[in-house]
Each structure stands twice: as structure tokens, then as C-alpha cells.
Image (cartoon, rainbow, N blue to C red; front, top):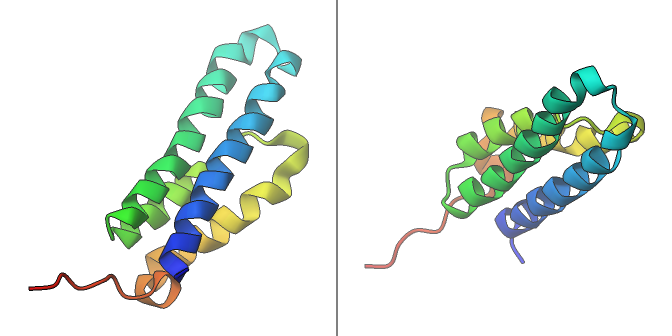
Amino acid sequence: MNRRRVLEIGSLVWAAAGAAVALSALSDVNDDAMALVALASIVFPLCALGGAIALRLNNDRTAGLLLLLSVATPTYFALPLNVPALVIGIALLAAPSLIAGNPPTPKA
């Protein structure tokens, strides 16, 4: 399994874990903030899903940006869950070929 595939799977796992944690804690949110927190609990994990899709399409910098956005997922007590997405997102923006490897070249 290559690095790109590992990053794709990691992004999918982060999307699922972030959504699970964020959505499970919605019952503890004040009524005033419920709509905003519910929206954030859905949109930001979807950014991680988009990052996995961008990696699949060899759009590494886009994937990095989407992973950085996904860090805003409200994970409350489980804040360390956000750290790998933050680090990998920054790394993909800074040096995508070092992190994800070179994209496969199409065969002629």
C-alpha cells in the first residue's frame, strides 16, 4: 500500500471519527447554538471526505486545504483527534510530493 492510499484511508477515518464525536455531543449544546454546531459537525467532516477524494484525483494541495478546513470539526473533549489532520494538511500544502508521493503517470 502506497502513501497516497494510506492518506486517503486516514482522511476517511478522520471524517468518520470527527463526525461521530461531533454529532454524538450535539445533545449537550445550548439550543441557541444548536444549528451552527450541527452545521459545523456535518460540513467540516465532509471536508475530510473531500480531502480523500482530492487525494484519489491527485489534487494534493486541494486535499491539504480540505484537511486543514476539517480541523474545525467540533470534537470537544477529543481535541487531539484533530492534530493529525492539521499536520498532514499543512504538509500537503507545503510539500505534496514528499508527503503523498509522486502521482502515478498515465501509461501511453
